[in-house]
Amino acid sequence: MKKILAIDDNSINLELIGEILKTYYPNFIYIHSLTGEDGIEKANEEKPELILLDILMPGLNGFDVCKILKGSNRTKHIPILMVSALGQDALERTKGLDAGADAFISKPFNQSELRARINVALRIKEVEDLLRKRNENLEFDIKDQNRKHLQDENRFIQISEHAREFYWEVDSDDIFIYVSPVVEQTLEVSPLDIIGKQNFESLFQLTGTLDGKEIIKNIKFSNIEIELNINQNELWLSVSGFSVIDKNGIYKGKRGACYDITRRKKAEIALKDNLKQIKKYQAKLKKLNSEITLIEERERRRIAENLHDSLGQTLSLAYMNLSSINDVNCTPDVKKIIKGTSELLNKAIDESRTLTYDLSPPILYELGLVPAIKWKLEQIERKTGIETILTVNDVPEELKNEHNIFLYRIVNELFTNINKHANATKISVQVFTEKEMYNIIVEDDGIGFNVEKNKTAANTGGYGLMSIVERLDSINGSIKINSILNRGTKAKIIVPFN
Image (tube, rainbow, N blue to C red; front, side, top):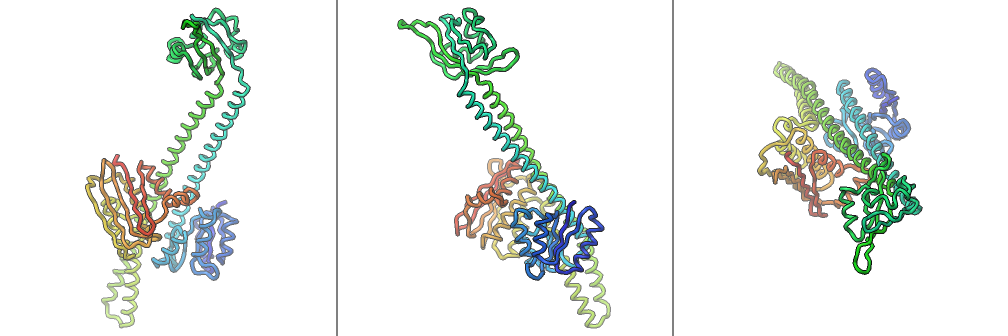
């Protein structure tokens, strides 16, 4: 049975969460822990579907617990929802996201919001588990096919070492004058029915074929593969031989040998079919990856709309009502309290609006990719003080909405990496078209990094650059990254219009 783990040093909070989960998630077993150390142990033992984690705890705090869980192969795929009174602090949220948290919710929390966050986390976890399972199955299939291919090669080598080939000779009219007895086991025909009765073309079924003509014309021929139909069974032979010429240059016939290569050819055909099937699986996997990204984006947008339409409107109405009270004759102390509360409500409205835009910026859907990038750069410059420049040249049309979503998330991930790792003072973005290709260049003046080392790290279990490459590959795009240590990084994204 699936489980949900809550880690909080306050037993009252654990009881409250337990009652909510019991009411709305009866099919889940509720596990709780009062310390970070005990929570880590239970997470490793129980492997829950979701972890609700408090930040302020004695001993290991929530950030430390999150880092440990996300750093372990056993627990790194479990989504972590941080539930804390510090959730409204942007710096604390950033610190939590750096530690690996998947989402935040502030105390005291609204039950509907908590349920929405849990539902999103569980849905994303389910899809990621399905994708990992399919990846594992695909890797198993590839390894199994490689193993079978190696077995077939080993069999072929063993057969070759003990192969029973048959030898033959034809006269100047290409009529057989000699065939070794092994021909009967290979072609299921007696040498007596061949010698003096059949010619080279008829026995090897070469009439009208290119291979037959080449064999007839060539003085020497080696390992020419021919396909025969023997009693409705497919048979492949490798034919080698040479022409017999007397001292006067007169053609006297041919001599040669035939090897049965049926098993090898069937193995090659089977391997080609298996490779085609694997390519189909890979195409399906890429399509699934794209669909997961779009599902995640739709879920982000749905949550953002709900926050805007419900929470945002409610806060705005409360602010308006409180402001109207401020006009009534009240004592200075009451007015001071009303003013302070109004400021808190106004801050909450700003926070909900920022959260809505971070989840799914409406500007991306309403105005397109370039305005969304411009808005994001302005947000970065306002929050971090990093200088930003946006240059747009010759962009005649917007891409499909799905492509805009992919590109916005990719560019946003590059911005996040710059902000977290580059120590940059300037970010410049160029958007332009070139040879029916949509180009985006993101450049910073930060410390740079080793591109090849980063690729190796991605291949051994990280995401980063690999996730960007996979997303672009799903829309036939590509990325080129050039980075020089202490001189900055330049990333060029290329996507076809069609």
